[in-house]
Length: 112
Image (cartoon, rainbow, N blue to C red; front, top):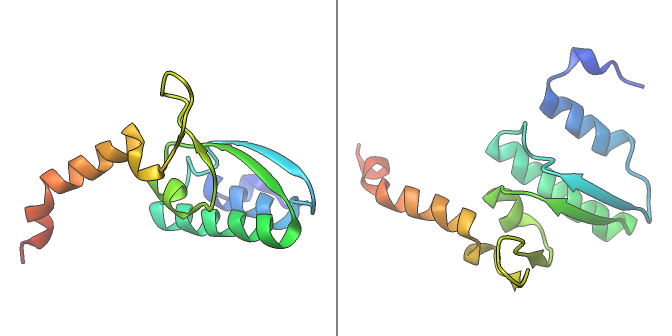
């Protein structure tokens, strides 16, 4: 068992996935990305995809992360919609908010 107090929340999350995930199991994850940087959110989503494919694991994940939603090879249920419909990650209100924000500030990224 690793000494959790020596690691950041993000390092602890990755340690969990490295050491405690077992094949052919179901995992319920509530915002596993919350303490991770965007690049580590992508890394975590890739790891989850790998575990689902290679280890036969199943994951039910609650997330607001556009990075996780865009990388996970998953069926997405929009729990903010009236009828909990299946949606594309690009249709979700939270993701659209990010898109609109960056689109509004696009010129700032293009400045030299």
